[in-house]
Image (tube, rainbow, N blue to C red; front, side):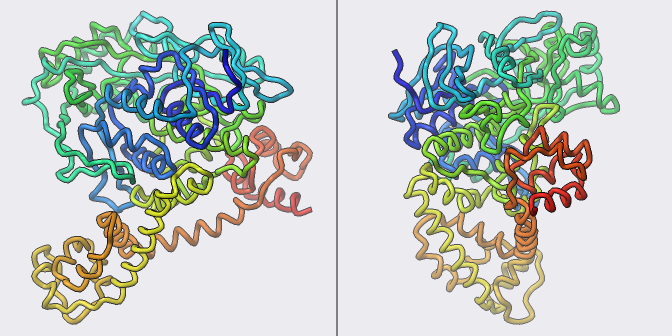
Length: 623
């Protein structure tokens, strides 16, 4: 019935969608096995992409040739650049999406890829011979052969949904869970555990009084995620802001005795940075109120997502508390909030390619690795697919360094440290965040992706052009002298001191109030210089200004990255028996033996491995 595939991707969420697209676009004969093709990349939780650090990940996915940025641009209903008042290392794009269009657009894109087949079924086992993957077995008792398998099962592995005292199997509400695969992976030697996440009530927007809320509009000039020629938004839908109150908290507390979380029915650990509303009012009992973001789920949809009101309390308690919130006094709901508990596998069982250490050519990506978020999942799916195809073609893997990408930080954190709670990316996790700006993701990563055969030659040509023009413009601005009479009116307008004498434009740009795009309106020679730029003008101007304003900070991080990289390039063999290196502490030996780091750099980031242990290890490999 089936030919042998190069790659089988199991699961059609955000990780599975990116993985199947990347593998097929790299020329591998690929099969996507999912329970329901119409649920591809479903937005099970909030109808949004990006945000703090997550927006950087989407731009990196796009720069690497993934599709999340393109699909988001085509289906978003609002765009905001968060943290714009801070330095560019913190700027994070975020978009509200039309969640139905988002899934349909993903399916449409996948159906255009000629090397990609689909099969609607549930995988219950992986087929292994001599420690190597050879295919999968489905619920329909069909065996499908493959050279490589990528598991992206999301929250479906033995998923259990909790609403008050009720609980039932499901990967998300209305869809059944996946049974059998966890148990079979455990038989193969994998370690599994449980995690928990949740989602809020969905409200009928026709019953909401927005006049009692604070409107949150999108950016006046909306941006986009993709570096391709996707069109920016011409119109946008607003979100709104409201708050809980002490009265709301009191109503919620009436349901605590039925809470599956508080009475111990849920064993999995939930996300620290996105807790349920009942969790919030317990952990932050000193707070009188909590913010709620009221988000529309589409252009024409009446469904409203109440961000910040995730709950697994009984549905009547949820509704009663909701109606005590300003604007929701007459609210009707489409479905209650719920918690979902599911299996995951500690990511320390993976190599830095996301291939499992136990089974050759078997890869894990997404929530199966203990992460949370569409963005983190998509990034893992993309890298797992790239490395799967590269290995099948006997080529070197694509390993992104911590100084090269947020995705590099994400994967390194997971495989080195593991996770005890759903892992979420933050800018604070990236020690080189000044280098890893959302605006330069294409300059950093598209050449790497093109080299491995994913990002197109056309995209590389565009990046090379941008790089060249940015370099030329930086040099020009550093040498261009500005006379006071040309810019004093502008400086006065922005409350910046006038010039005392002729000054280099680069020095004037160091003033925080001065913007390159504004000051060049007063400088005809600069306008003439940039008039020959044929594409990406705004991107080039923005990157040029950042490189000039933050030159010293960027240089410091680059120098630090170079110093640290010497340890990243000292590689460790898989067959080292760390337990025999007696001079290393016992705790460090245990951790090193379990994780089997690929380099001294990775070893140094393992909890419990001290600088003294690293010194001993360097002496050992030197011998």
